[in-house]
Length: 285
Image (cartoon, rainbow, N blue to C red):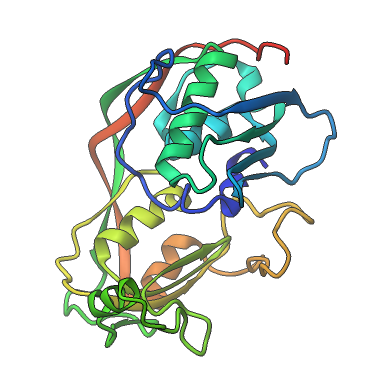
């Protein structure tokens, strides 16, 4: 389950977000947890989670260290380079409390990074490397889009402004699709008002490479995409209510072309990576 715990991590696997600075020991200005416990998980369970809870509680359950690093730095798997074998083998539980009851997600991730430095002696640096990437392009020469991709009629900017002013706005369409946003579950993407640049970023983890938009399509789009992932989630590892992906559906590449009228073209380009310099098993509580 190492590669798929981010399905239940809010926003962590959905973007190739900009890098935080390379890990270094915490300073007086670095946000840190008020208290934190790190314990090995020997349960042999396949499921795991990485989440915040009300009241400033933070909990990681049954995660490998590589997955913790990936979430803390908001990276995709292919952007983490190096590290010993046990990063993908040993699993850990972390329980922690933040200094404030309602921290922002960037603050929590900075605290996780500080914990990695303190408890795992984690040191890394970032580099930009020339690597294979995918370009998202329109598949047909005449520019006709697929049956499950259409220009959005929703003004997402106006809806966001209304929400900021306290106006109640429905978050989803009747079919469960977000009116403005993306719901990415194993083998399925539902989106409303999404730009092609955001779609490309959201596809990066499933495609296994940084994906960039070169479609030339402007504005927001509504879409539904269904495919069979390369690695199906093991039984019992999905959150309650989350549907399993189809086992005999099209691949991501085929589904993009058949359903959305888009395709991924292999190219090479610059990719930000986090290179692990050193790391140790965690210090005991």
